[in-house]
Image 1: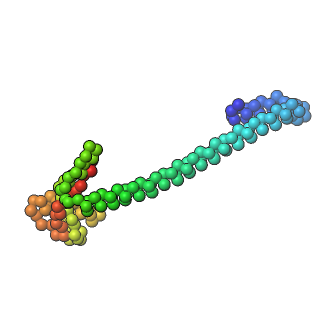
Image 2: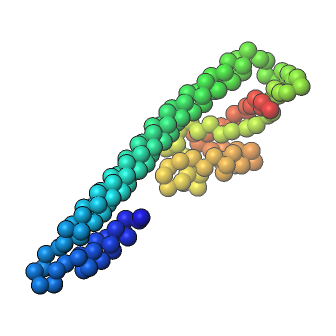
Image 3: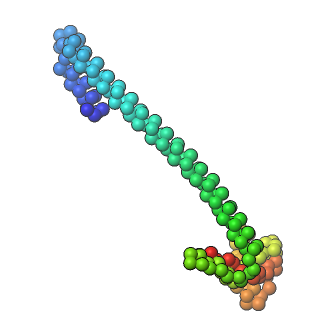
Length: 159
């Protein structure tokens, strides 16, 4: 029996088992109401247990998400540390490969902004960040940008 059906039955029992002259509920009505009240109590408490379980599961998920975030941060740091170690122990341009992986280098350029305050307005954002793409384009075209210069990089690629 569903919880909402219990409330309907209580109304039906009260209507059927009330003495119209005295307004009292018959013994049979009292027994039925007590049984329904116990069933209603059991159902309500069962729902409370379900709520508690769901709340505990949600808390466990939250804790697991927090744990996994920390683990991800640890793994990201470890990955960067190993890549730096590998980078320090290989000559730039040195290639290696096997059946599964390869190490190679690719050339790239990036803009090193030495002093953001010296940048012309056309090369800054409202937040006073360097527009590195524009600066790079200007420097590559032979222009001068105060506070900036091009740096040639070799980036390691792991596949």
